[in-house]
Amino acid sequence: MDEFHREGDVLHCEDVPLADIANSAGTPAYVYSHAALYRSYRELDEAFDGLDHMVCFAAKANGNLAVLRALASFGAGVDIVSGGELYRAMRAGFDPKKVVFAGVGKTEAELMAGLGERILLFNVESAAELEHLERMANVYGKRARVALRINPDVEPETHEHISTGHGGSKFGVAVEEALALAERIKGYRCVDLIGVHQHIGSQITKPEPYKESVEKSAALVDELRSRGFDIQYFNIGGGLGIKYKDEETFSPKELVDAIRPTLEATKTKIICEMGRYIAGGAGVLLTSVIYRKKSGGKSFLVADAGMNDLLRPSLYDAHHEVEAVGPNGSLESADLVGPVCESGDYLARDRELPDAREGDVLAVMNAGAYGFSMASNYNSRLKPAEVMVRGERWSVVREREHYSDLVRGELVPAFL
Ligand code: LLP
Image (cartoon, rainbow, N blue to C red; front, side, top):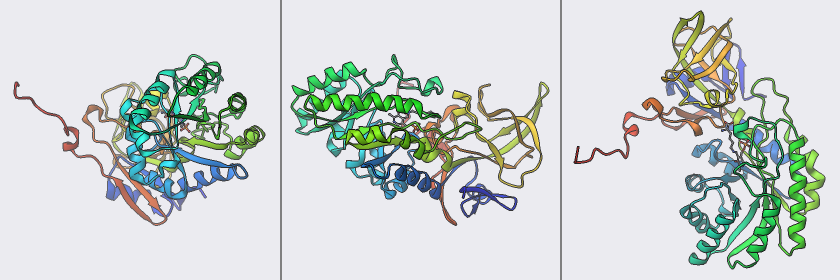
């Protein structure tokens, strides 16, 4: 069952009418379904059945503590890219032995924090980072477990802003450089090279780029083994796409079936680190129509959520379905825009949208990944509330901000 569904005329999240949440928590508000998080996590986990594996959640997709706690309780690991995400992951109760740390620009403080928690793996992306890690581990008497992130130079055919595995991108190192780094590690005292990592991009809708890159990475696993490294982990990254509109997507099972023989042959523990696939369909953004307006022959629904709440349409021209939380009436051609002072501030453009009246609540669908996590305070707007639903229970899991939050940490100096 789809966790976001209609009962009679009313859009529900699990057993809760979304209108009830809008009425008491207010709008804009993100609403997450616990059951949907569990379903997508399980689907991934089951796809890897028969392989030694760990499904990680990419915390950048949704860092809310309740979301992270739910995933930790399912048994997931977590992929982090900053000290802040490490902090969240620890607060949410993840086992440090299930934490993998990616990112091209980890600072010394962040490396130190990861060493301090004894995380499972640092996914190292450059010679300079490796050098820093060796030094930090030496100084603090720790061992650094490392996977080299390779850039397999494949074209994942997704939006250029979220494509990472092609040659010339800032991510990872080429295979030849990975081999050179490995040789360098032989001279290091505190670094154990035990993994290979790749991540080729996001919202990938075909298995072929994975197949191609997994084959390249698996060949590197073999080569490193033949050079004496005890490679135990192969992290195939995240990136599995979801259906926002009418994209042809493929399932976790189809992904794993396409690469299973290659994965098996590596005799490693397989890690994946999915964000969007786990959280994307598990959340909606509720927003109320403030005004209706006509301008230049076009109709506009002006909503109380804008680009600062959900940036994806403005940044990537991303498509999110929009539904009325009340009865599905007629449709009208309109733009759904926010209150932000930018013409790029829209949630849906040139679309057939619910013919909503002022005060009506709309649900912007598939907003559970890269929604709140990319929200900002632009225009000094308050970040929205977040809510989690489980069955017939629901709870605010992040309060709507207050004006005082906007100026927290700001100071007016004495010389003014
Ligand atoms: N691992 C690494 C190293 C990553 O950089 C990412 C995402 C993931 C895993 C998770 O990818 P996913 O499974 O969610 O596709 N803001 C963009 C997406 C940026 C993705 C960045 N990296 C969007 O809203 O579409």
